[in-house]
Image (cartoon, rainbow, N blue to C red; front, top):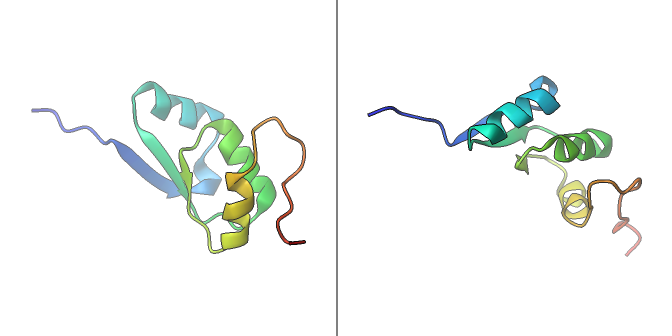
Length: 79
C-alpha cells in the first residue's frame, strides 16, 4: 500500500505558484505558516494555498471576505 500525503504545511516563504500547482495537481492540500502580513496572505491565496496559519485574527477575518483579483483588502477594523 502506497502512503500519500493529503495535506502539507510549510513556511510561507517557501511557497510559490509552481509549488501550489504541483500540490493541487496531486490532490494535496497546502497550508502555510506563519503569515501575519496582508500582502503575503493575499499572494498566497492567489497562488492557490488551501489555508493560512496566522497570529493575526483580524487578518484572517479580512482574508475570509477577500476575493482573489480584488486590489484591496476589506476593512473590518473600522467597525
